[in-house]
Structures are given as structure tokens and as C-alpha cells.
Length: 200
Image 1: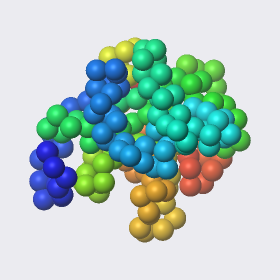
Image 2: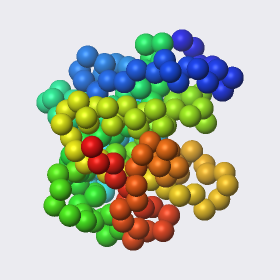
Image 3: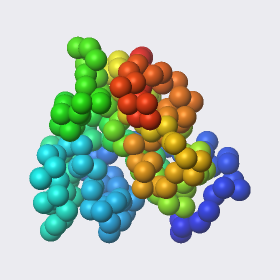
Image 4: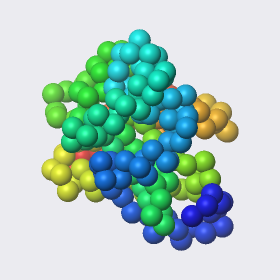
């Protein structure tokens, strides 16, 4: 399927399918992230590395190789959304401890000792944005969690302070999307970046 706008075909949301990222679908993940690694050679390693390691990883495909090693090792990394056999969206999803930046965050400190899995970022292919993909994507994460016995899902979305939020600021996800998927605010040290949870 070539890039095309889908805003006039809302039924396509019912045709989305979801898979966890594995060696088998790595090529589709790679195609989704493209030459920029989703954004600035991130390859969804921002929360998984120290600041210095992440910055170094932007060169010589190190962040990409680091993500590939996570996948090769069989560790959980995230959930892909597919449409017509092409990956069109991504949600990072793994145990909170795998995202070391969360452990150092003053705003999103742990609030209890429950075993938590986190959704720190979302990425949707450009021609599929603003078409309602994020809600079914988040629900796909919930279904994955339910199937794998995960009881508590946590995320850190943004509540925009302006009507039109640039895409580059929406990578943590919008609160309204998580709210529609059934998440509730559990901590609000940050007014615009609440901690939300879904309990299964």
C-alpha cells in the first residue's frame, strides 16, 4: 500500500491488527520508522538509555542496533498496528524498569510497588495521523497485556496547552486518547503530563 490519506475511510480502523515486535516483523518496524528512526534517530531508545548513551546512539545506527538487540534477545519492546499488512503505528510497551529514564524522573516517580508495564511513547505513520489510530492502538496494547497476564499499564501522556499541537510534541500520546481507551489519572505532579493507568 502506498502512502495515502485515509481520513475519508474511518472503517479502516476496524481492519487494524496488532502484533508485538519480534524478529519476524522487524522489517516492517524498520520500514515504519524509516531513515530518521521515527524522529532524530531515536529508534524508541530515548527512555531506555542514559542521556549520553542515547545521544551517542544517534550515530552509526547505534540506537537502531540497540533496539534490534532487544528484539533478538526476546525481550518485550512494544506493539505494532498493521493495516493491509504494513505497520502503520507503534506503541512502546515493556516493564517500567526497562525504561531507565522513568526511574530517574522527578515527575513520574513510582507511586507504589505494583509490577507495572509502561507505554512511554507512540508513533503513527504520517499519512495515518489524525485519523483516530491512537485509541485502537492503545486498546491493542491492553489486549496484549490481558493475553500475557499483565495487570497494570501505565502511561505519561500530554494534555495540550494549545489547540494545535505539533506532531513532534505528541510522541508521548495525548491524554484524551488514553482516556477514551479507559485509562484513569493516578498522579498529577505535572499538570500537563499526568500519570495514567489501566488496571486489568
